Every structure is written in C-alpha cells, then in structure tokens.
Image 1 (tube, rainbow, N blue to C red):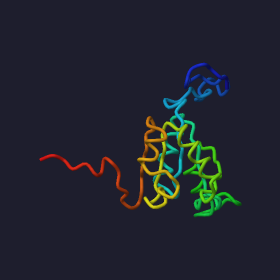
Image 2 (image 1 turned 180 degrees about the vertical axis):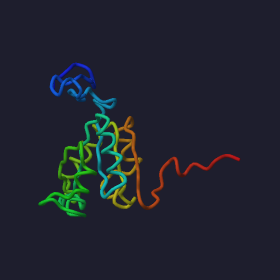
Image 3 (image 1 turned 60 degrees about the vertical axis):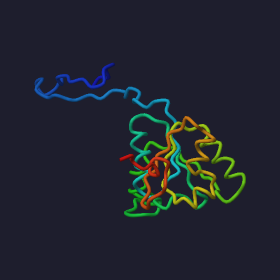
Length: 166
C-alpha cells in the first residue's frame, strides 16, 4: 500500500489480477479543535466522555486526577491492570495527578484552570467550593473559558437560575 497526501484514497491492488481494492488511510489532518485546551476535572462517565469527544476532534485535553487516581482506572472489565472503561473514557487525554487537599495542589489546579479554553466538571457544589472552582471563581480567574457541567445531580448555574419572562 502506498501513502498519499489526501485524507482517504482508493486504489487498485497490483496483485490478485487487479481485482482487489484497498482503502489506504494517511496521516490524519489536524482536527477542527486543534489548539483548543480542555481541562477535564470530571470523574466517572458522562462529563469525561464530553472531554474525550473534544479530544477526538483534535483538542488538547488534560485530565486532572486526584491523589488516589481516577476511580475508573479500576472499574469494569480489565486487561491486565488497564480498565477498558477507563481506556474508552480517557482516550486522547494527557493526565496529571493533583492533591486537591494541599495548597500546592490547589495552586496547580488554579493555574491549569487559568490557562484552559474549556473546563469540564461534574463535582457537587461543595467540592467545587473547596477547590476554588465554582463557576464564579472560574469566571473571575479565566473569563474567556467555557465551563461545561455534566453532573448526575443538579448543580446550580447562572443559566439554570434565570427565570423565563412570561
């Protein structure tokens, strides 16, 4: 098979009397979100999947794990010491471990939130307050950031608090 400059090319195989058609894939072109920095502070499944999909589109995703690591690392079917669920949810991500209980860990977390274009969360409000990562605190630190919340339990947000006018 030969590499070509296009995204996908079809060509006739020289062998098998020219009847075989192979699809050759080339080096992928940059994704639509190349250059976008995503900070994934979420755990478990729904919110981290949002960050994984942004990574699928070319975003640079950094997964922040607590000092104990992500709970998904030991969840579900395993292949050796690798969880298939963790591999799915954390594809296209780089990981950093932060101790949320120390001033140094919170300083690191705040520096990461200040540099991100998109921040993905799913923690309860009391945890976000303890981390200094409520919507108001994130907006003050990084007003241009897009904050995505995909929580299992309702978390008040500025949009959710707006009452439609009758």
